[in-house]
Image (cartoon, rainbow, N blue to C red; front, side, top):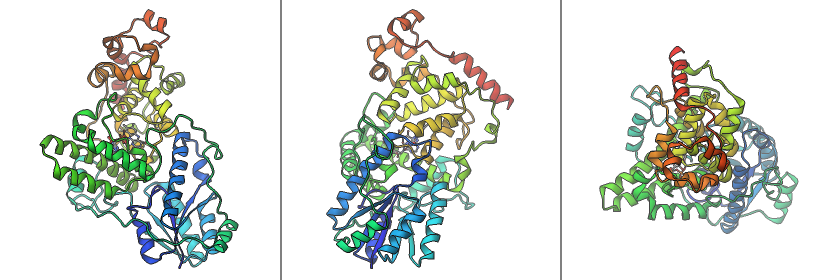
Length: 471
Ligand code: FAD
């Protein structure tokens, strides 16, 4: 019996719960990926993300071939394309892993309905999280809205073993291949064919192998000092696995198991603490996924009522300057230029630029949220929305108001100005002291072609607080 496994944000054959379940039922398991025009035409898509995804699909096709089977590509709305393919191949069932995003859930319901109409069985599993939504609840059986108690509960629960890797599968016969093509299976297009051009390369190469290599590098070095180093954007101190986790080229159960093993063999408390600090980040990812699952309205607007009608300035010229890295605040500009050039930004800097947009420029966080989605290769609705709402103080954060001072942040986390110099070449010969305090004279700014500060931090934060208090 032929089974189709529909890949979405789980572009791997190892430790994939739904795929392993499909393989258990049949040796004839075919992968399928559907290029969904509804997603590809959205205005919050990043070229780098599409290019990365296509790269991952290319690698996934190789992995399928090695395992004896194939990954088929479709380019149409899933509720039309999948039943067409499944019928043409006389598939018995279609399997896939659940997703928490509102759009995905709606789409999946439509796909389920149209498959069932054709008499095709649908099977779903949870794969992308260590603990699925509904498994981590408060004593009153409610979803958590605060991270720390969530973590306490989440970290105590036993974690599942990695799922079996796809092996010894069977592919299509030449006749079936023809039927698949007739039913819409195409060869994998390039990102450019899809209308997205990205030429700057990737911080992390696409695919399962590259993700594991990156993890091993991180495990052998930086994870031991993560607690200390994770806040310094000039240091290669974080895993840079976010795109791998977003597209699921790395299985979360395997990742967890490896960090647990490492922790057991660690000799010092410091390194054990560092590993745990990293695990806490994985839990942040799950916290935001649970939050989006239970509160889908987060995707539409602020969680806290206080921000429902906040009097934002929404100055378009300021917003443009922020996007381009031309605010005249070196740490902010360096970070925005890193984002524009690489499709990635260090977490500390994501917090700094988000605070600056909302508290200094008094611009609605949703503008920033969207711009990030248009630029990030790890752009993910749950984490991005969570990060933005946290930074705007509109989200699930017990602290009522957070305002970052850009120069204090730079002094603490980029004390030598190394990160600033890397991303703002016009300031490369300036002393650290000026870079981190931002105290560069107007004449000097003009001489090196660097922007004057567009706003005054002190005045703006006072103004923001006033509006917040009056709200
Ligand atoms: P590490 O420090 O190595 O962390 C390991 C993994 O844990 C990450 O890969 C990520 O999957 C997860 N993680 C770490 N921190 C967070 C966090 N605060 N929230 C949720 N998950 C986390 N992360 C995204 O994956 N996609 C986004 O679109 C995104 N947008 C953000 C927007 C803002 C305003 C902020 C403040 C944070 C955002 N983050 C987002 C979270 C975080 O910045 C990135 O996950 C992290 O910088 C990725 O780098 P890394 O893989 O080296 O992380």
